Length: 299
View 1 (tube, rainbow, N blue to C red):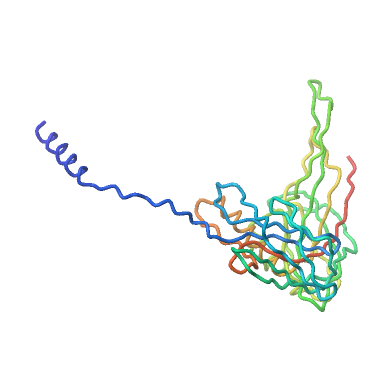
View 2: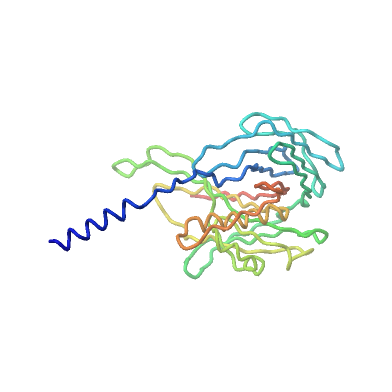
């Protein structure tokens, strides 16, 4: 008993000698801006601007930035602020156009050089059924398009599936239906797909360059990574296949973003930084063109 009391007394004496060190609440968020702008030749230009904030904080939209776009073919234009960090420019630009995007703000002053990629066109899309290891019987797609030999091109392929979800009554009858859409899980074994290791981080899109198909009529195959399920409550009625010709800045942004999102859900890896083209800031400004083919399905 005496030995126990001796240790208790020693613990109390040691604890009384400990000084608490105050913790300074310093934010790790840098004082800078986040900018996103994706430029398509057939659309007016929209840009979002916000201040860097902590992950648990609300968006801090920036509405006092000065944004301009200089086009060699059309001249200089200024963006109009529409509130909530949204800026609009009622001008569209041409494929292969060279642009200078400039932002002026107390937190950031930068000029970004942009080249809109050449227009892309899907010549034909074939669908067929195939067997894939670890997937089973599934749908595959063979896409034909023409690649430009003049430019170095970067591409993204993804599919969007549209389906009806029915409400089923007690006697298994269809009472009501709702329309849904989501991205189709896809994969591929083509060399240009496999050479981009970032494709391991997502099943919702495939990113690749034209390093082995430059200047030729290209044929690429990819497949659904999940077997088609048959259900009385779900009816798949349309699939849209998108092919995008994106500039290298968007290509790097999407690649690193996919890796970052995948690594965020892993307890063993530290998420990598997302690559942008804003000096001393975050986000990406770049151009793209696209084409889409719609596949109507019979149920």
